[in-house]
Amino acid sequence: MEKNRQERRKQPISACIDSALERYFHDLDGHPPADLYRMVLHEVEMPLLKAVLDHTRGNQSKAAEILGINRSTLRKKLEIYNLNN
Image (cartoon, rainbow, N blue to C red; front, side, top):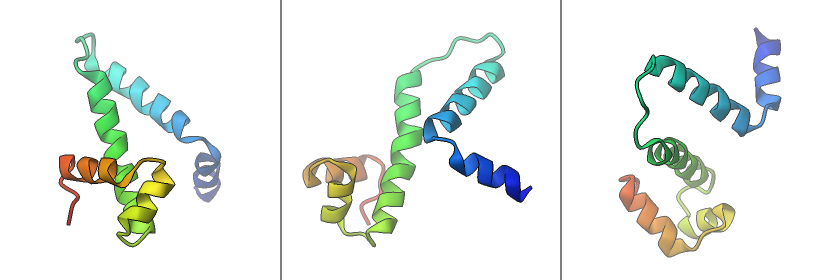
């Protein structure tokens, strides 16, 4: 079990996304997907913002720098996802 976990940690995030999308399309069972781009961005962006804010202990300037975006863009995104505590 531990070896499987270590192997998964070595995979890039894109591999996790690939697997998740394969499952998503399979689970659709022939139904057409809708608004997939927005859904994927939402599913990835919110945990990314949370993780970086946790890493910086809520310091938005540092978080914006790590993310490679300006602070006002970060604040807008935090508002969108209701993460502006």
